[in-house]
Image (cartoon, rainbow, N blue to C red; front, top):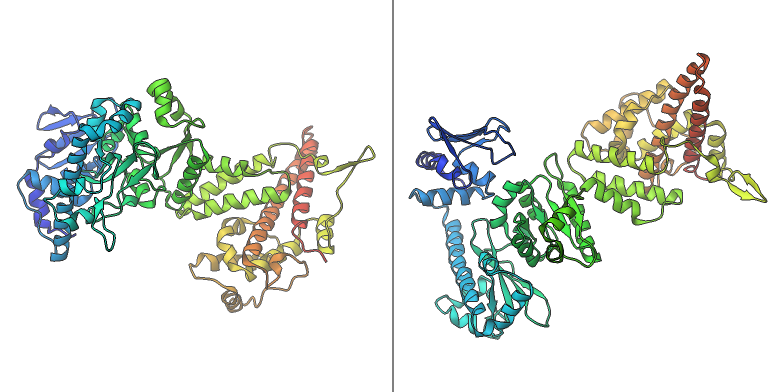
Amino acid sequence: MSLPPSFLDELRARTRVSSVVGQDVKLIKAGKEYKACCPFHHEKTPSFYVNDEKGFYHCFGCSKHGDAISFLTDYRGLGFMDAVKELAGKVGMEVPAPDPRAQERAQKRAGLIDVTEASADWFREQLNGIDGSGARAYIGKRRLSDATVQKFGLGFAPDSRGKLKRALGQFDEKMLVEAGMLIDVEGKDPYDRFRGRMMIPIRDARGRTIAFGGRIIGDGEPKYLNSPDTPLFDKGNSLYNLDLALAAARKADRVIVVEGYMDVIALDQAGIAEVVAPNGTALTEGQLHLLWRMSPSPILCFDGDAAGQKAARRAAERALPLLGPERSLSFVTLPDGQDPDDVVKQGGAGAFEKILEDAEPLVERLWREERDATELVTPEQRAALKMRLWSHAKSIQDPSLSQLYREEWLARFDKLVGRGERQYQPRAQWKQKGGRWTPPPPPVGSDAREIARVGIGGPTVAAMLHGYALFPQAIAEDVEVLAALPIADPDQARLRNHLVDAALSGETLDRSRIATILAGDGLGAPPRVVMGFSFTRPDEQPEVAARDLKLALEAIAATAEIDQALEEATQALGHGDENAFAEQQRLHARKAEMNERLASLAIGD
């Protein structure tokens, strides 16, 4: 909704910024201004100032700056219109009516909130009545204090199909259905949705009840029943306890995500208030954005069982495309068989804080999971690990962050397989026969044997460039390594440069477009190559060709670096460096490994 600038100007003029900020921050009078320790970052000496005359706040430490509206949106996490409505209500202004349809929707929402608030009041009354004894026993079993029950507005829905309906008779039956309080089945009278359950109100950022979660008392399924999506409640774009956790998260400089309502309530009672939960759903994109408004790296704390770890994995994969410099996740895993309530009951808040100390960043979590997913004995298993990691990194839409993830995981992969971290041990690939170590059989096919014999050279580079011309979609993924590759042959270097330029042009490239570009630049069709690889076959699957192109490029690039290092080692040996000979031997072994790696990609004949 667009508001007239004149309305917003008058609203700001009528609102004292200090009165808004002062509700959450202890302000100290300092001349014509107020000062405080900044609520947006940790500091010991006040550098946060509020100036009512100029109508803004400013922090000289972190440069946070804004007016009364932005304080409510940035600090409390309110939406813009919610912030405007809150301020307008306090200064006696009416927010300009939107178009008639939007106004009708707003009025409907207001009426439905009356329904859910009245329902919450009635559920609380039932908890203390005769029917609520079972729910009170459950609350006692969970060791919830009266203060906690009151704080979270817990109630009880009697096991009846019509008690709530009759109690809220002042509302139209259609409104009760639309608010999610009644179930409307065709051919039958609407009846109470929640029956025989402890009721947990779900509130929006302003603290208004918009939905419920109901926990069964005794046996029955489902254990938890949630309100359906309604004009008030979109479960994928809301978080349980958001209203209470907002200020606590600012103060603690973190937000913790747990699996369920009772996990939130137990941690809050233990003194850890910056906790929210998804509303019975896997973590959604909308919920992630809500979390990132509270903290740049929310901590996901899911149970250690298979279901909890599956939920954590889904959250990680959902977050990957959305990551940015101030948007990530961290993960902790609870001991198997325990939930947050178990942890704090046994060891108090300190035991839970101890678990939080071991939070894993997203980059570490995914690396560990993929590394431990399968054995890494064979080259195929290691290649599969590498492809999974590349796939994760590629899904990150922020280009610089995607590159950093690739580099981080590639470095870990290289260390894992011993690349550059330990001396090459060829016997690890040999086999013992009759008490003797014998080398593995040579690669199959004449192309593979030629590579193994003479090493990586002009023909293999030509084959690779031919592959990128046939499968140009693969260039964008490999463009940085390809562009930096030192190619001695001037014709091959020229072809490489044109391929890189085409990839960086922003055009959508296919095989025919590349051929047109090369022909237009006087290069004609890519040269025919004699060495056979998957990517030199025009009819190969693009995914297979792209995978093998990446592996070939890495082997060729590594060989170029090894050749440079060999030259330096040879020079050092000539100057009497006693360690240079050992370095030469290591590099020769490393080069042989690259030759064998590229040879393994060659197609047998």
